[in-house]
Figure 1 (tube, rainbow, N blue to C red):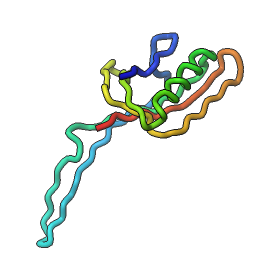
Figure 2: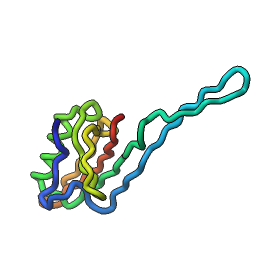
Figure 3: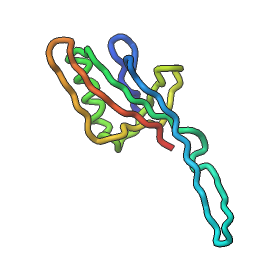
Figure 4: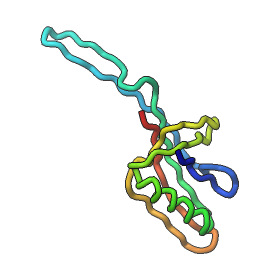
Length: 118
C-alpha cells in the first residue's frame, strides 16, 4: 500500500490543519416502542483537512500524481497523523476533485480532505 507523500520539509501537513473524529451509532426502534443502540464503527474514525501552501512545482506535481494514482476517493493509502505520528493503514481522499494552484515559483497551493476507512 502506498504512503501519503511528505513535503520536502518532512511534514505531511502545514498549519492551519484540522483533525476530527467521527462516531456513529445505529438505533433500532422496535414496534413496542423500545430501542436498541450499538456502535456502527469499532472505534472513532479520523478525518484530516490538509491545506498546503508555498509548495514548489515538484511538491505540487508529486501530490497531484499521488492523487491520480489513488483514483481520487477510490484509492487507499497509509497516512501519518501530523499531530501524534500515528500511522493509519487504510485512508482515502474524501472527494474525487482536487484544486491545485500554481501562482509562481514556490507558490503552489492545494487543499485535501483525508478520511480513515472502516
